[in-house]
Length: 116
Image: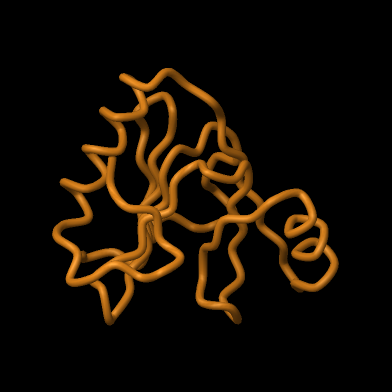
């Protein structure tokens, strides 16, 4: 994977680490793909409703509402993105595109969801 991270949205748009974090849309996130030296990348999808960015904790992670409150109170510059429900067919198309763009994984981590 060439980028540090890539974010895939419900409207089909994609933002990557070439974009300033302050400029990325906050709503409609479906998949976050983040570079990982051991596995090639981590793939986070909308199992939780929120994605938070904390460079001191490895970048992007998925969390629940309590994790959002913790993030807002402990990170100097908090950044929260919101997922959105969508139909299975639409999500599968976005997920497939994410896997194509992010490339092949070398391994799966325990905390990662396996592909559909």
